[in-house]
Image (cartoon, rainbow, N blue to C red):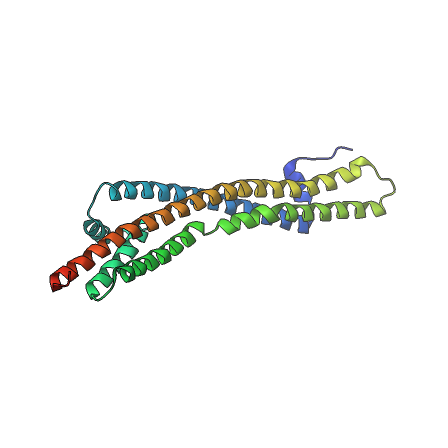
Length: 236
């Protein structure tokens, strides 16, 4: 007896539940690859934007002009630019109010930058949990389809007068495809999650270091402003 064990035929001959398992794993795999390519582009763009901004920032550019250049642009600020914009805007607002101490101005700017950093990291980390979910659950979903397929195959032997390897081979083969599809969906998702999680952590550390460095610069500017106010009132 010749039995067609081609991949497509095995999939088509599988039970309805196993087919649903395979379909769900296929959808999860396609979705995870979309997230992988999207996240790769986003992180690459974020690193390049941070490189450009740091090069401009540490070239000795005036902070007020740098801020005006960012706010006058048409595109929305992201990454390090967003953190700088939020902190310097708050610093200028508090310095223009007057009556603020240097520490109060710096603390206000620091809080604004911390909020901006949190929002930016939430944008960067978006969908990473999806990759983790696909990577951790897909093998079990595939295993469930395999177990169900094998159970169905052996139940079919109950009515058979003679059990041979040829009679159980198709059922076991189609069931094992579900496990293979589970691994196919899980392995790229796990690799991408680990890789991108590391890159996100390094990017967050880079943003946080810039936030602290900018706070130090604003601290010096705040003290200079305080001295200027005292000098103008004749109290210095």
